[in-house]
Picture 1 (tube, helix red, strand yellow):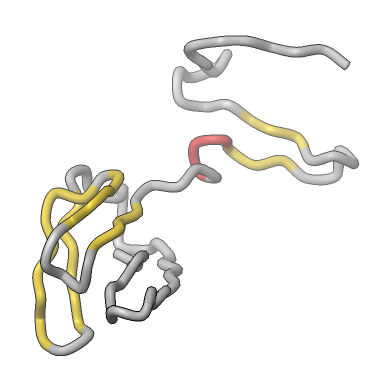
Picture 2 (picture 1 turned 90 degrees about the vertical axis):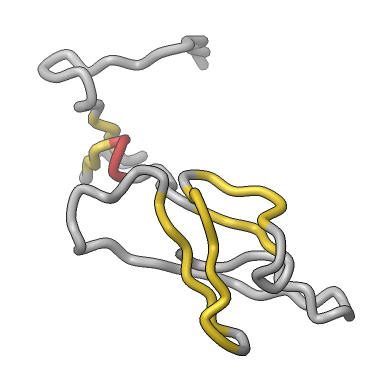
Length: 97
């Protein structure tokens, strides 16, 4: 098995165009489209404790929070996923954007 160590990947045909082939070779996908674009960890909307690509969070009502991207998605057709963990204090640990 070979190991590639790199600080930067650049596509051959376009800088951001890196194609990854599946294990069986039957499918390919664009690497940049398979990477997480945004996530946030906060304590019930009071304090953002960690995030990626989130500039702010708003408390829109009980259990209803909205976040603002630091860098917008390329279009409005993106999917979100999320989870909630209660550590016994009602503190939210992850939230979809």
